[in-house]
Length: 239
Image 1 (tube, rainbow, N blue to C red):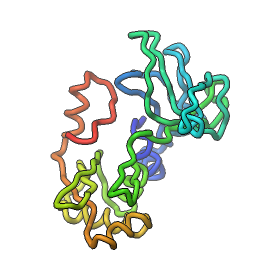
Image 2 (image 1 turned 180 degrees about the vertical axis):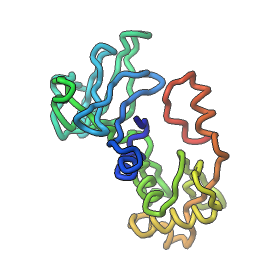
Image 3 (image 1 turned 135 degrees about the horizontal axis):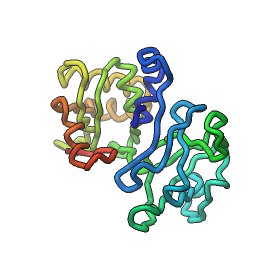
Image 4 (image 1 turned 90 degrees about the vertical axis):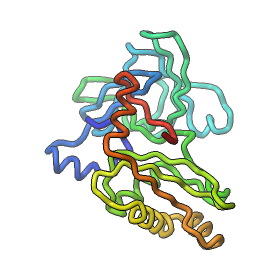
């Protein structure tokens, strides 16, 4: 079972070949703890457990327009994306905005004999990074760039910062194979330059490489997660 869905989705075939079975996933966070169980019928899908809390879903299109109406588990539609609000019934009775979106991929899991909807992780809603108002780079886009460049990593995080009048995308990466920061920087820049027209325009207009890479020591992410008492937070934008 893997807990970073975007990375797992990008390397699903490789993981299946290595392990002999398709990977399974779930959703948990510091605020929600373990509020879902993996789907068996749908690899990388999971079911929110109604015994764990109250789940409210705001359709993503309406949510972005400020519509505060939410739906229950029984009202979600296959193919639609939703923002999740969660109220924990086991810990503190607090309604929590996860700031994460999920896609409903099925109504039920026949192998588990469940009629509850099955979801896949879609994206974090507040993690697109804007560079000089030219381009907005998402986590999914960066993971695709890492994969296409053949760069294997344990995890990464990113932040935008300004230096000398230019805005840079700073990547903090824990690699699995040894490479220099410049090698990783050039590879990611080439991928973004080739596949993101707005990024290409930014780089060409100001004649610079908007990416800077900082390599982390092996074990950095694991040590951070250990400090969170066994929870599974997505580590912050910078450490």
